[in-house]
Image (cartoon, rainbow, N blue to C red; front, side):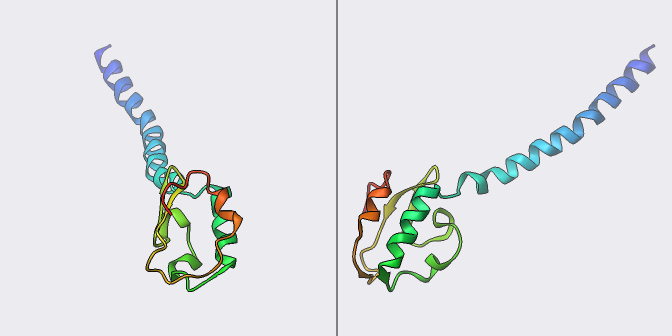
Length: 105
């Protein structure tokens, strides 16, 4: 009887391994999911960029919250655009108002 329980215990542990691996994969992918820029914020940034020249080269690709210079985010929302010293040229359009979590400009 003890040998059946020992085998059952080992078998039970093996059944949990796929679930553990799935959980590990989900946790490993979570940071990239959590860093995605809010769709409204991304659209606002793209709209602003169409009005500007001389923006940083990092703004031409990638996710703004992940890889854009001078852009800071919290929870996928743009909270800061540090534009001094960037030498932007153009207008600051009303699209800036769509960045509802922006606290530093």
